[in-house]
Image (cartoon, rainbow, N blue to C red; front, side, top):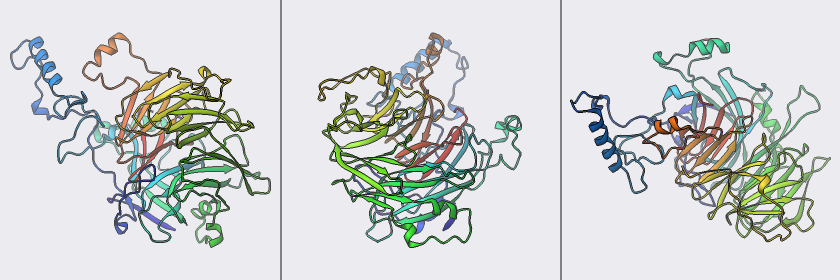
Length: 512
């Protein structure tokens, strides 16, 4: 077991669709990394001595303001976004000058930490623990599983990682930004409210191939004093799906001296039904024993079920219909036999595992580009969010999607909401676990954005946003994260998120 604190090195770049990161120096990446400095996304890019106060130059305000508007209109790039001169800085749009970096605004975060692993991880999943729900005290602790994307021919460099993040302290505020009153109301003390060095502990299981996606399933114990059984499913570059029982690896974090045997590192099941690699993977939230969906780049999907004896059986009859790769797959949170799939053919399809035809019940065209990711709301189960290669993400009302007598029929409904803010591919989207209006989105423009779909502007507010029309009013927060690939809300720490890319970013904003 390794135990370390953050240092300043970055990992390699984890890429999608079979692309692998370049070689990186593993000697410098065995410790957790400090967060790189970057500017506040909404901070003006000019110094205080360049700001002209109203009226101080002797001209009428109307004349001066007209000149400023004309200058702002000229200061845009080819996309119409600010070109880096005076004006509103928009992460992912405004260009940084050579040598410029972005630094986070500490006052915007309740918690912010960065941790790195020896190799970058394209995918991870957060685990529930026995420390309680709705936790608000600091320092915080989290458990996760992740699969590495090692660019190496050495056996054992690729790993399934079982991770414990601890000593996650609250963001230390400047003297002028003290939130002592809020801390007192929350029952916190001084020792909880100072920033601390995060600690990353890991247990690793060797893998023969890189991991494209990993998802975990926890089976509650009949004894409330015992932890759940934790299973992981890993979609690998080798086209195999590996199921591991990582329960002993998690227990080892809190039981010093625990020795993991070679047998405990081996998969309890290997699914070989797929002939090509894939990225689509999901455990059913309504099948307690364990039911797994997997989809590959050939457009084929399979169901694997855990038996009463603890074994696994895969139904070798595939679900087919997509004309491109299956990029995302998710079970319905309310109907045990229903699932949805998203594909590079631009469609989302709804399926029923009881169907003898193995064909989709509903096919909907949601994009003209690859649909990379999808998230089914667990609070309002008729809402589905999707994100595509063109940077557009949207929300769909499933009540407007109707089964068709002709299985090949393709519907083209109108989304409840659609946003074209990101200018690179959407790599992750996830609904807030308890608020059906909040969504987290990650994109190839190195940002994680938080959105509140309940926000609407009245006329007065619309006038006050003049000059930042490119920023939707529903956008709550922008977090910079290099090469971000996946983002998840923590299920037991309200408002806390974890993202993976070149490294892990753990943060909680004051706005959510």
